[in-house]
Image (cartoon, rainbow, N blue to C red):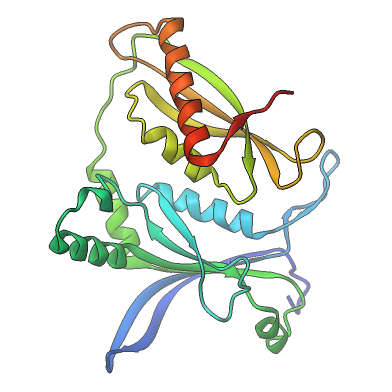
Length: 259
């Protein structure tokens, strides 16, 4: 940065050291850093600064190799609290609700700790000032071992799936949700219905203001339905849609946007 390089994407693989229960622990980590513009000014587009959302998007793309990531708020004291997050490899093949014994619960907790990848967020201003960094700095630190194990497991789980013979059907739902509701909650609510024909759930658009009341926002989701054995009838898709809307209303207080 002292040499005029303001738009930076850097990474380093190295080792960290800490004491755990009095014993020294060495961990190989991947450290990522980004600052400056996410998109420089061009003829057709305005310049845009790199944000925490760009960092999350980059990490999620990496996490796809390991079967996906999960995010929860919180992190180290040297990160800005509002943007600090802890990252783990997404759990597959069932969750805590399927564990009925304390042994299974302990195993689930141990597995969660083993899958904990690291942290990400914006460098705290006091730290940036100490280092004489006059731009917003976004960083992530990931443990390499669970990441590589996740990638190997995801590759081993890959299976050939033949192209479907029957067409897919897409339905868009413009939902009005309370602030603080996440897309993950919406997707989990739909998946909890265990409708086999639900193939994909995507966030298509987000809108605030206008006719949307204060404390609410509009999220348009796109759900793709497909049956590998037959063409879906309109009545089936209508039934699936009704069940989805009812579940979203009951669990998240979601309603359809009227205009």
